[in-house]
Amino acid sequence: MAKIGIILGSTRPGRNGEAVAKWVEKLAQKRSDATFELVDIADYNLPLLDEPYPAMMQQYTKEHTKAWSKKISEFDGFIFVSAEYNHSIPGALKNAIDYLNVEWKNKAVGFVAYGSAGGTRAVEALRLVAGELHMADVRAQVMLNLFTDFENMSVFTPDPRHEESLNDVFDQVITWSGALKTLRV
Image: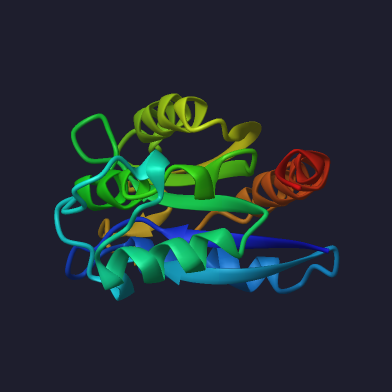
């Protein structure tokens, strides 16, 4: 059975992403075709990339990197929950991704994003990064709008129609995670 990490990609105080990630996790827990775990990058206290060697070498010298590598290595696929900041992803998420390389390779990834334009540009940026890291990004995605899926742009109240889109993301990430498993052996 595939193990999917739900990566909470914002570390900002008062972030909307925590409510979104918990919603994703709650809906994921209803499924029996994979296991899911919420991973908050804030829990890893990753400073601005401070490893002396390129991530592809896996010669980690810092304990925070070793812990992050160990956690990400556990998963067969991922769902990134990302805010959109200035037409892209939060710097903390990009930093967390850049700490590693091989740990992401040949794993499926789906996206749940939020912002004033539904997080679409954040997903576009993430798809480029995923491609470079040999991740298989799935077509389905969930786009949440700050004006319609949040009260006062801060209290998460998703339109129920997003549940169907999220289940499409789950289906595709789980399917691709299984298909890619042979490449990781």
